[in-house]
Image 1 (cartoon, rainbow, N blue to C red):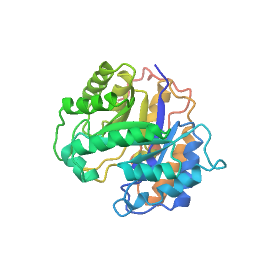
Image 2: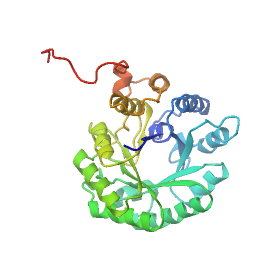
Image 3: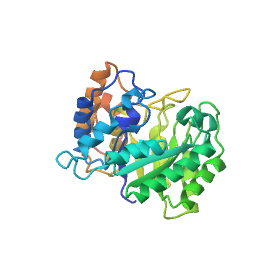
Image 4: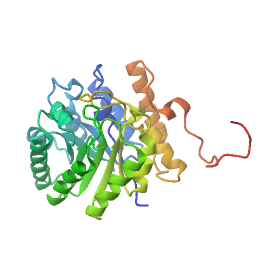
Length: 313
């Protein structure tokens, strides 16, 4: 199995839906702790309209802070989300080295999220992605609502694959499928990612799963089986898209990493700092957050991977 790349999106996808704004100083402290864990990528925020998503109003400031040589985390790729050309301009101006951008396969979700239909959004995002590459930045493109939509229901798989083909034809080689509404099931996940790899064996696939209906980790495992190597998750399992009818949190970073480590994968990642951030977030928002491992704690290292012979049920 190829090395699994862990992309922490809590500072962006995790916080964007919260009503209580997290102070910039607190975000900086949380990001510093997350950067100390061995996680590969951290998404600081999105370059969107400040009035529509107030929690992201300090994204430019965060990047200006962390792109200073004295503050840049070693060994961590800093990423930001953009929805259009203006967002890219802002991101390039504050030194973002890696951009994530996407198109919703749901016409309704696309209009609620970006004010554009899927066709218009696809044309603009592909042009924006090419501009980012030309500027020397890394790029990941995604198909949002790839597994279903809380407004439209089932999303035809051909529509998802058509968007992926357009990305590949444009020379965009890192492609994510995002389960924005949390509708995915493991068989569907495996089928779609296998179909993408049949289009281009060299594509780098990423998975972004929400746990709205309790299938987040099962879908991550299905994606692993299908050869996906990039995974996005959020500390404490917080977050969700504010432009869906039913909102659910992301797969929790500590839950996913704990699962991988029980499978003898990514044992280099330190869970304690992730859990520290999750506890601080639970205290800040004054409520219990969704992560299972935050509640139970991890199984101690060295414990047997399989159960014993006892008859308890």
